[in-house]
Length: 105
Ligand SMILES: Cc1cc2nc3c(=O)[nH]c(=O)nc-3n(C[C@H](O)[C@H](O)[C@H](O)COP(=O)(O)OP(=O)(O)OC[C@H]3O[C@@H](n4cnc5c(N)ncnc54)[C@H](O)[C@@H]3O)c2cc1C
Image (cartoon, rainbow, N blue to C red; front, top):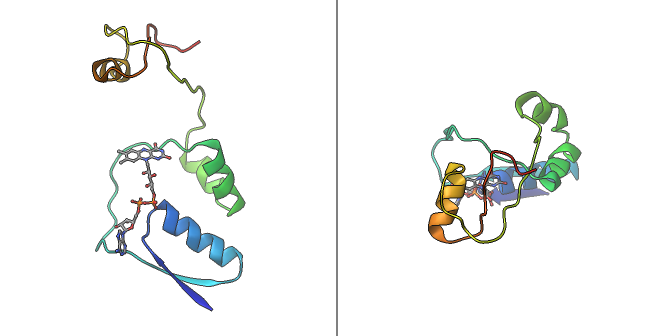
């Protein structure tokens, strides 16, 4: 049996690899005519890393990625001044953020 996966984003590619691991052939199609790098960083959360590692991509991830050293979840009332660009923009939008220092510790 051969599956057709529509969309070559992380969801489609992961689905195709999962099908392959289960012994099923998969054809991935995408409406985009070419794949281009965006030049941005992607933060992979632990469950995503686990899934990709289970699909045999652990070594490639280790070779191309940088392990997360610290993770901050900012909550509370916006203070609005200084801080990081993220803190400023969150303050502007009125969401979260009493970000007062360079570290979340
Ligand atoms: C600026 C930005 C930053 C982000 N940063 C992060 C991050 O750091 N960490 C993180 O985990 N997530 C991040 N995300 C979210 C993450 O990019 C998405 O959750 C993820 O890409 C979704 O994957 P997907 O495969 O479901 O969809 P997509 O990546 O959107 O892929 C869908 C694919 O399907 C194709 N397609 C659409 N319609 C059709 C069709 N009819 N036929 C064939 N192909 C079709 C599209 O061309 C596309 O390639 C970010 C998103 C944005 C916009």
